[in-house]
Image (tube, rainbow over all chains, first blue to last red; front, side, top):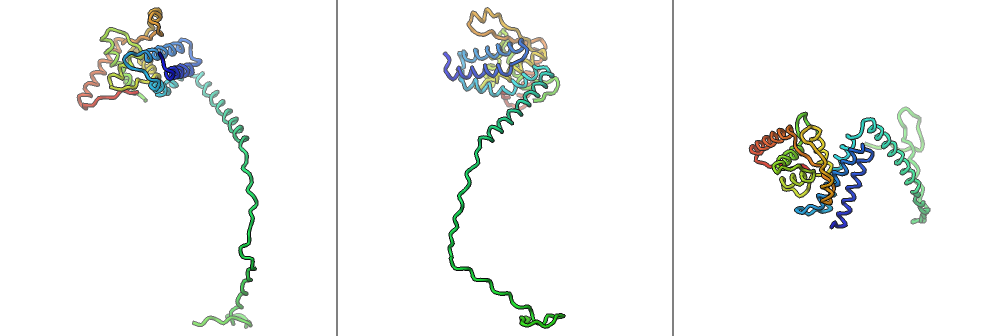
Length: 153
Length: 119
């Protein structure tokens, strides 16, 4: 009697096996699916080693990379190239569509309210002092009056 | 893992080693038996991953070290289970497996360490 978790794990393994054997030569595809099916059955009905759904999922995940490599190796080079091109094109189209859809859904945040400025000191600021007159009798220039005395040393 | 020509990766060595053990029982073996044997031999709870195991078995078969056949579907139907793909060692596989075991035994004697089976 399989638990619900085990049923789900087995279904995931079957689905993954169907995915990576999709469009393979029928003899290769059927052999791999049957072999995985046999392994699953043996694992689930193992009398000595109680199978857990987590074990099944872990075996699946750890072997995914090898599954993909095996699947690529089983396909003809021409098909692989074509599959890569189709996959890349599909991914690009999907990415553009996704970005457009996501970007159009984003609304700009509301503009902030006009700031209210309060005068803290209502007295007018005094004008700056006038600049000092030029220095008296600068060398080489005519006498200027009024003028600022040269600083004494 | 990139292999040197004519060498086996650790998992393939484990598979051949397990195949020798199972051959002593005069029985062909299937993938799950190999995974279980490797896990028992290395005191691990986790069995070898599906993809890793069956890809390695396929490589060994392509190298001519193993051969496989599907068991009689009637027998599987009688036992109400899916048919098994049964593997057995070829003569070349047997020689390679023995050489591998000798090499591993000598390495074990030198280092005193036990190798851990790959996942």
